[in-house]
Length: 282
Image (tube, rainbow, N blue to C red; front, side):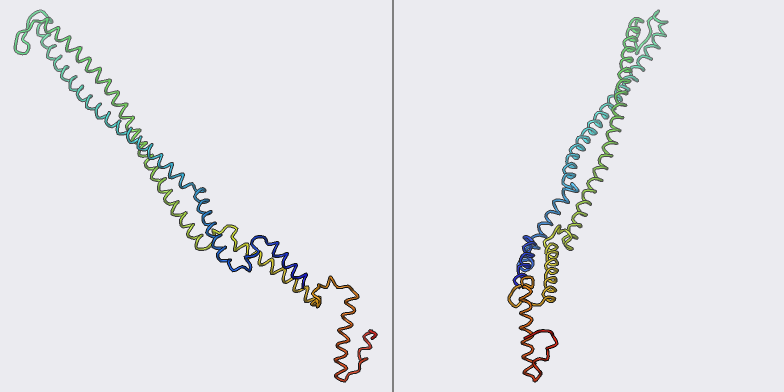
């Protein structure tokens, strides 16, 4: 029995820090603590694994870039509007100067190309004056026309830039909404996983309960082995295991037990030498 107790103590000691959980009254508290700790680990691990917080931070930075793109589009819209107004004004100036040029040119032709005075705007005008006005208006019309072509080209460039910037803005807005939806769905899925894990206990990584069960099985197996040993070899009356009993002691103990049985038989009226055939001499 002493050896059995020693083996049991060694088995419990080999369990480590969790051995006392098998018999201690605080097992539920320890398991709850382990579950709470591992749930926190799961939260941190999943949050880091899926990087939802990092994605949200990057999305906030993307919002700033989207705002910059929106400002760029707004500026292009304003510049296109101003250019359109400028082009419209230049177009009117070109038409006006061209109309004035045509009127002067008719007067110049009526003057015989500068040979006589003609009526211009309800008064007689010298051909030289008409020729000078004709040249001035022609230069003005040419200037307006050149500026109009230039501004039209600038307007086309700004319009193309606006279309491209607006298209890009729509694309990044769509991507932004898609990412935001993905993050939101990810948070919902993550919360669902955590709730399911919390309800089933699957979030308990290397749980104390699982370790306790394993240690309990190990101790139970060891106890069964020791019980079989005791059953096969008999209980040591002196508190020593059979491995500590010498052969001579075993013979002496068996002889004493048999003598005790013979005395009981003798008291019942059976011959004392009834066991003579056993081969023992008394």
